[in-house]
Image (tube, rainbow, N blue to C red; front, side, top):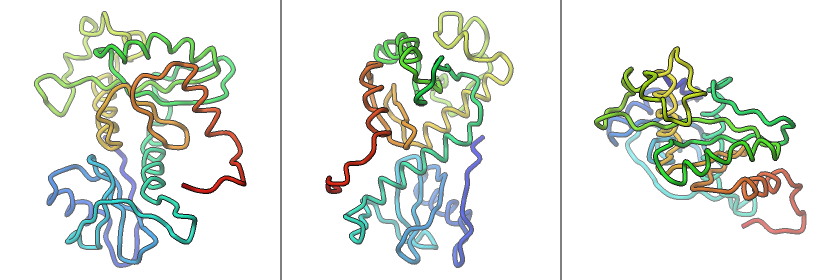
Length: 230
């Protein structure tokens, strides 16, 4: 389902490195990207970002800082880039709740089973009133712990009382839900609801519409040139 993107670099085969790390770790690997250190590659997995040599023989887990750029957190930048890349592959989602006068756009991974998820879903109209368009990506737990959605979960009866019922299309319903589950695994989303901001930041848990608007306004605000990087 996922259209994973890999850069072709001299001296390393990204697909081979992806397969090697995935096989040795036993977790999906979705992205391989360069780092400023020659021979070291960022590997995006369902368990977070790791760093690997070209052969996948050595893995490093931790934070990479660029000391020449005021200790810029390159691991955090890599995570943001990974989230933006993943969401860009969705195209025009079937569940895009547009604001009348859009000033911001945000992505919500959620379901309708948890209390905080239902609170977030109930307040989506208020977010739209505030000028925030919401890309809604439901994560529905597959029955019996399976990795894929069964067709039965998309039958009309199963969704009759769901807050997604008016948004999920009948055609390709199972395929769409499975795709969103794959995206959530790629991005390491383990708690719902989770919000992905336009800059790639991840905000976990319930946030009121006013809180979200404040966060969105902040990331669009000009940086204070007198502030130091942390």
